[in-house]
Length: 324
Image 1 (cartoon, rainbow, N blue to C red):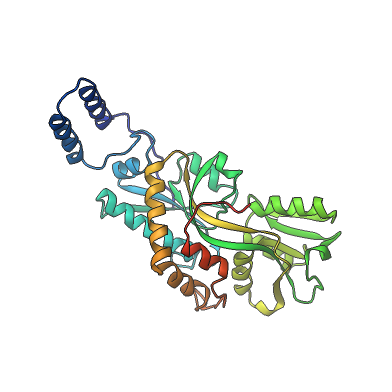
Image 2: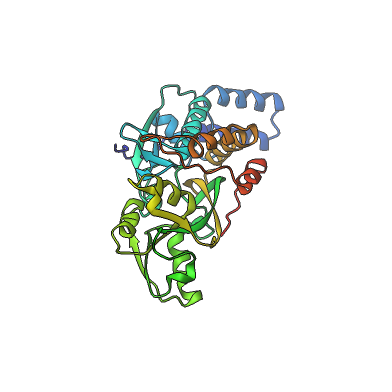
């Protein structure tokens, strides 16, 4: 599925009308006249803070949104053989529903655009996607390029190893080959771990999560270091899940958030409104139960991962603070 290339609309009639209102106000024109002009603007349809930059305006004009999705990020965003599903995907579609209502576009087209850890930020910056809610970590370093919503998931960084490997914690990796996924925040964490603890590891960066797990399964690496829920999901998809174990004292905690272009206040406000409402109302906890404590498609696996105290705290107090 490919998203159509987006171009900026050179016409800005509402901006011109807004400038007219400001000129009227500086000339001490009556408040009644200003109110009349403002009402005329409202009748023209949705108004955006920056006509040329607003993602919502372009979505409104194109009657389409390009949504970045993952193909194998179980249980957050993945293809189940028929469609994209997952915990994060469900949140993304709630946001799309809110966009439909806000823009009065009930027939809004959703173009799902496959992304990877390495391509997601470039594709966002190149306008190939408008919004991404999958398994992207909110970090301070990434804030220089993109913007993030309130967090929707908090997790520790751990490792997946073969049960008979004899590896229980990170110091057991000294002198061994490990794998992580290229373009992820964990890739940076792993290199810092190697340097700080003088582990002398050989670090492989796989293109995606399935290939990283395959390196452990095939014996090319002894451990796959990644976000704990990703490891739990990948383990559960294996023909013999009991052959693997997720282990290691958590290196750090990080958080997932939706990602969009910087400086887009209207879209940020809309996305945060949806996430906050889901978390405070209890909808987010019910969604969590669906994807982490019950059988999920396509094979009916159960991740059997109860809601953590950190997640309960997030739901009680929505925020956009990165944890790195």
